[in-house]
Structure formats: structure tokens, C-alpha cells
Length: 379
Image 1 (cartoon, rainbow, N blue to C red):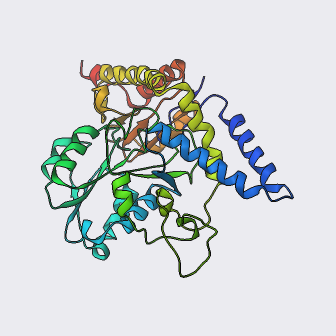
Image 2 (cartoon, rainbow, N blue to C red):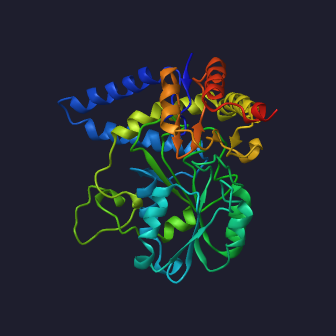
């Protein structure tokens, strides 16, 4: 039995340890060789990672590059925009965005001249409604950052609808796809946006440090990233101090010597997702999530995620009753080899390809024991 319910944190797949170990061992052998082949091989490995991401989101050639994490990717993008795109305008974000991005944006407004406008949750609700986001989105919004799937409710927004509204009012539209990519379909070919940021953790089963920034060609051409370095050039080995120029493609968002190991460690996960197919991954996940939701409805547990599968990512969040101690429940579940986590009183459950039906049944039994059944107590 695998009781792993943590795909919202670190994803895994059958044989992950062996495939990661083989990939890292190959790299170690190349990097340790006493010859001059290290950098060509390392940069080729990084490019295979970038190409896997490009195929995953169906992005044009030359539009993605690597970043250490989502926060760094967003900072790099904002630092590269023409001044007039943000100065004197609002930057729109939802209150249920990933907190790290809000922390970043809250500190950049004065410097870049924008006003951060955070769309709030309605009282008693656990995600920001798409309509509420649209209602706050007028022509004075220079940039809107959309969260594809939220980390606190697993709410999956209608990116197509939101992006179309953004194009109509002339805003830059960015999407953080971190919590949904790999378990829910996303394509910039099908749903054009101006930029995408993500990590390769979560449902992509990669490692930390393997973020991605993808920028649409029209916007990319106008960007002059302030965080730049020798790898931002068409030829990184051009060391003429007075002849710096930006690369024509997403490499202009590179800067110093790029990290390679995270890309090497994450490529097996990306390849596994591509080989398996998101439709298969999502179908297996949906069956387990619906099993949990069914038990929650039967027992009267609070569900803090959308019930409509088309509006939900790969997780389901449950509200723990008043008086329970989340840390004790997490510890009790761990003792039964059932692994999940909580944010405050929100229990986060994300079953994936290694999670078994037996484990789901065991989880339900444990939750019934620890938090009971409000519906049965009331009858």
C-alpha cells in the first residue's frame, strides 16, 4: 500500500528513484571526466529539460528558459518589461495566489511604479471566483497574474476566459501553472497568454530548483531584463565589455552561469509525464479524489475545494473541525503510513499514480476515527 497524498508538494512515480539516480550518475560521470566535454554535455542536458517543458505546454521554440523557482522567474519577467507597461498602473493578483509571489509583488510596487491590487475572497469562501477577478480587471491593469490551480483550495480557474478578458483590455497576462501542470491540461497554443511561470515539483515529479519562465514571442522581443549576464547574449563566450546584446530568444532572461543539476534531476519526471499522458494521470487521480469527496459528503466533512471536477485541480482540501489539532492528526496518519499535510485547519490531500485505492480507504477510515461523522452524530 502506498499512502502518499503529497503531490501538491513533491510528486513521485513508479521507479522514480532509479531513473533519477541513473540520470544523476550519468551527469556525474560526464562532469568528473578529465577532458573538455563537460560544458557541451551539461548545456545539452539543460536544453533537453527546456525542450520537455516546451512540448508539455506546447510553446513555440525559443520561448522557455530555466529559473531557480517561480518567484525568481516572475521577478526576472517584471524586471525586463518596458517601463510604461507597469508604471502608473495596477498589477492584479488574487488573494489565493501562492504567497511567495505576493510577498515579491508587495515589495516591487514602489520601485516599478505600479499599485498592487489583490482581489479578496468572499467571506466564508476558500477561493477567489473568476468573476470577481474579472470585475476588478479594467484597462488600467498593466499586468494580471492568474493562478491556474490554487494551493489552498485546488480551485482551477478558467484560464481561457480570463486570458480573453485580459487581451480585450490590453493587459499583460501571466499564469502560474505550478499546482496544476502535469495533472490538468494546459497549452499556450490552445490558450495564448503572455508568460508562464512554474516549478517542476508537484505533479511533474521533479526536484526543487528547476523552475521555468516562458514568454510569448511578441512580449519577449520587447523585454530587456535587468538581471542579465554572459548567458543573456547570443554568444555567451563573447566577452567584449562594450558590445553586450540580448539573445533574440528566451535566453535573454538567462544571466550568470546556469544551474544544471536541477534540470538533470527533473527531466525523468517530465519524461514520465509525457510518456504516461496527462489524460491517464488525471483519470487515475480523479477516481481517487472522487472517492475521498464521496466519503466527505457521506460523513458531513467540510470540503474546501470545488465539487465540479472541471473547476478542480488534482487535490481535495478538507476543513478540520473546530477543536481538532491538525499536527496531531497528521502525525496519527503518518503512523499508519498515510502522508499528507495541513495549512492551518485545511487538510490537503493529493493522490497520484503511486497512491492506491487501499490507501484511500485506510485514509477515510482514519479520518472517520479522528474527526468523526457530523452527519451521523446529528441523526
